[in-house]
Length: 66
Image 1 (cartoon, rainbow, N blue to C red):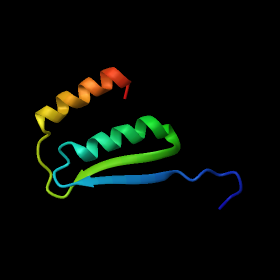
Image 2 (image 1 turned 60 degrees about the horizontal axis):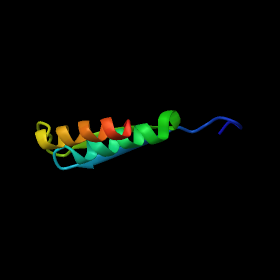
Image 3 (image 1 turned 180 degrees about the vertical axis):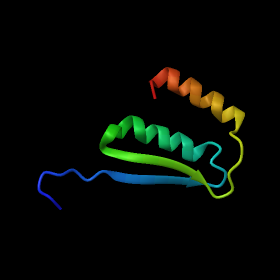
Image 4 (image 1 turned 120 degrees about the horizontal axis):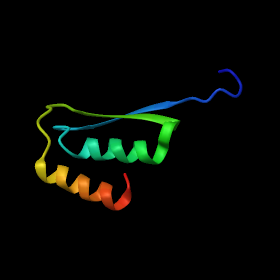
C-alpha cells in the first residue's frame, strides 16, 4: 500500500428481504462514516419495503437527521 493512501472499506448488510433492517443499517453507517466507507444493503429474497418500517425510518430521520 502506498504510504498516506487511505483504504476505503465496503460493508454489505444483508437481511432476508432487504425490507427494513439492512436498509436502516446501510443509511446509519453512511451517516456515521461519511466518505470513509461505502455501505450497501441487500436481501437474500428481496421484497417490497415494509410500510411500517418506511414510516419509522422517516420519523427517525427527521428526529436524528439520518
